[in-house]
Length: 114
Picture 1 (cartoon, rainbow, N blue to C red):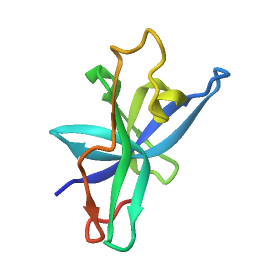
Picture 2 (cartoon, rainbow, N blue to C red; picture 1 turned 180 degrees about the horizontal axis):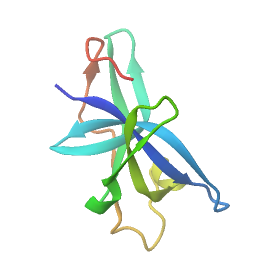
Picture 3 (cartoon, helix red, strand yellow; picture 1 turned 120 degrees about the vertical axis):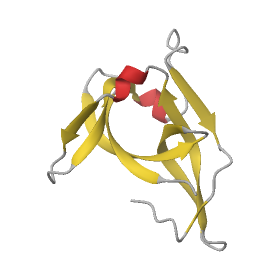
């Protein structure tokens, strides 16, 4: 079973402005991965990530903060360039992120996403 959760992420826009947003996560191959976009197969009742990514630095995950609802959430402390959410790692930062396009993961209706 693939676990699904959310993480607060500091997304850095191309103009340098940043926004904190929630991005869904999955456990894949023993690691937590962020899922910026899903592909749904409603006829068969499953969904799959279009892509997943994760920072390589473990320290990037170390902060827990209260979100607007007061719940504790894990915050990805290092800003993530918006291009990474779109599957493109910026030049010179290839050693900071791993991106996997269309991983072999299917989440069925009984494993609801957040």
